[in-house]
Each structure stands twice: as structure tokens, then as C-alpha cells.
Length: 157
Image (cartoon, rainbow, N blue to C red; front, side, top):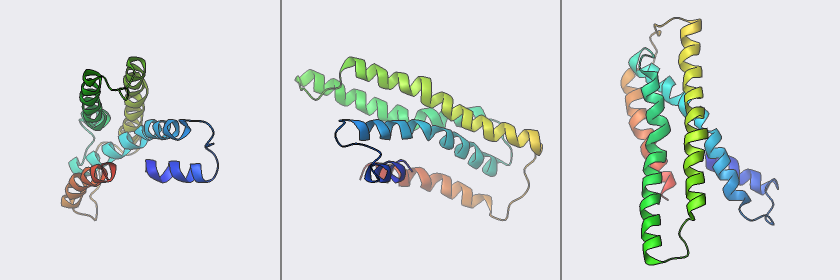
């Protein structure tokens, strides 16, 4: 989704090539804002699989922390290696802590807000019992396993 939004905006002229880092900043902002959709979608999928929204805060936390946490751990390890070898390509300490602050102060609360919007809206309007669907629950379990694999494949290509 992030790559579907940012490059067309750059091609349309919204991101000036004269300002360095505008594309990377736009990618980071879009990634942070899409946390709302990630929380909403993960709790929606959880509700379809479990037939209730009990335990939605745990699902929201795993959604907000799993992929960014693994990415941050890998980036931290690579940055330590770069600092150890004396490379100039290492991330400055201030920028590193600003990325962590963006994750904790913006991305995680946005993910929880999207998740709460889905879980609490259902409970307020329809009650706690989900109706049966036409699609079997095994499809949702299959989609829940295949979706992250596709995202990881797209990120690493």
C-alpha cells in the first residue's frame, strides 16, 4: 500500500526532486499513517477468525510491534556493525532515537486507534456475537498466513 501511494505522488509532482530526502520522508509518513489501517485490518481479521473481538488489544500490540520490532532489531544490528567498522554509512545516534520515538509515539498509538475503532464500533452497534459468514474460517486462517509472507516478499525484493 505504501509503494502504491508514494511513487504516484512523486510522479505527479507533489514531491520536488530539488529537496533531498522528500521521498524518504513521504515514505515514512505514509508508513506511519497506514498503521491505522493495519490495526483496523488485523482486528477485523481476528474477529472473523475468532467470531468475537475478545483479546483485540493483544492482536493490536502484535500488529504494532512485530514487523517494526524485527526491522528495528535488524537495523540496530547492522548499525552496530557499521559503527564498529568505522563506516560513514552508520545512522547518527540522534536520527536513530528519532526513529524509535516515531515508532513508539506515533505508530503504536495509531495502530491501537484503528484497532479500537474496529473492535469497539462492532460492540456498540451489533453486540458481541458475530454472524456466520459465507466464507469458511479456514480461508481467513490461510489468508492470515499468506498475507504477511507476501508483504515480506515484497519488502525484500
